[in-house]
Length: 618
Image (cartoon, rainbow, N blue to C red; front, side, top):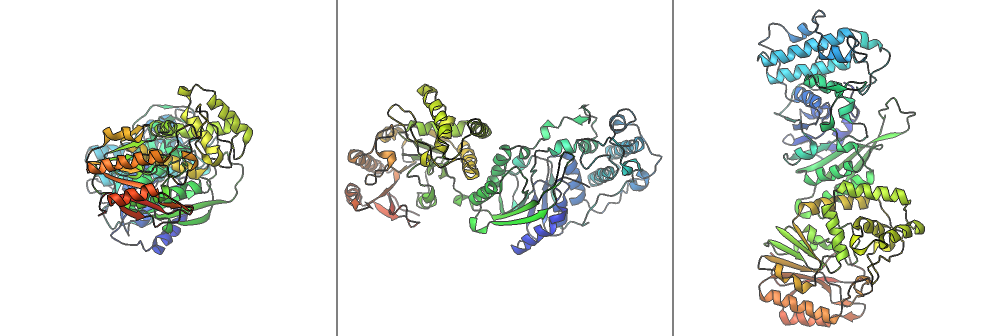
């Protein structure tokens, strides 16, 4: 059967990849999440237990036939169904004849004779099933065989979104009822077949190898194969338009929509309970190679990432003008264990701990219900800690508003806003004039009505993506050489999804006023401005108060007070920097006999990071 995106021609490439990774274990479960015509599942069904899924019912029928069919005997029928269905005298003027042949319409999908044969066969299959003359396996096998037979005589160029205006020679030949094509007859295990949205099913399944072959063009499979869906269902739907399309709005795929595709892909990879992930995609696809790799590196072990580029003939529809070089992509990654998956804030917050998150998690206490990120900044730390409730606090209420926006807005809405504004104002790296226009647009808004989406756009194209304001809270960062790309898009999408999943309270208070949220079941993480570095975020010249010795002493007294109440805390800081020493901190640590752990990762701008804790790490 001709089918867009069919992987028949690269099955050997997929198999070679699997063998090179030594994943050919017969006890493995292999999931084909977007099965289409079950080409991949059918190929591997003699090696693995297969989980197959597609949101189209016609695909479900084909997968049932190829993956779950035992020896078919049709014992309750008087004759072989293939003999009955190949009797040219068995005709019926039914739904297909009335609507998709010239018998009672202008649609030229099928000749009148073939349309009547389709109606007879489909009606008879349904009747046999209702009368219990065929079992479920036989039922799906016969419908799948009908779909195979139909594809040989349909008057279409390859898909069913439109019919040809002249009869193709093969379309006027009598239809033969033939078995569904199967490269391999028998399955090694009892397989599972689903007819669900991949984004929902992924939450309920698990296995060893997850193979993902999502749609990659704007063409909706539900539209291109509406007629096969109708034949499979045979439910006499309401149809409309020149092509007689049924309402397939509930079957549209987000993978055929820019922005939605990236969001749903990240969600599937994040939630997949599979150790090995293989993705087929196209060089002409909606998602970029850079975006795909960013997602796979976040959720998988970067050192295991493999990329294979295969020269491939592209499917061309009738509107295509010419064919260039096109490639099929194969990606592989071994997924990380959950505790090692970390999310990065889309805010480039100075002093952020994105590179230290795993170190901080590894040295955190094991039992707590609430986590407080006391100087939350871009929220790189708090978003990665597992707690029943997380409290984010930062004196910079503008950053808090940005994070609340990431949580509350539909991610696709934010995506569309960024894309629209970049196009409207022709924003690009270093484009000073365009940048100043949107900065003026933001600053001219009343303070209480300033749009955090617009502020985020300014940050993206601002100098070093800094978050800085004047004393009137006007954004005053100059244009920079930074911008918006697919790596930032991946940060936005993964961060927003994770933030929406968490129970977070957002605050903008002085740290001492957060005490009402603290009890013995609370873990407090502190990443204050560093007294001896005086970064631009704590110099008091960005619209918010700075940090001085008085603040440092106040914080250390506050932490001692928590310690006296048996509240666990972790403090990030440095003791030495460019000849300077934080003697206040040193003395406090010595007096209270707190434990110091040095960060053993790469040097962070020639400064040795430490954490101070008041508990034992288990």
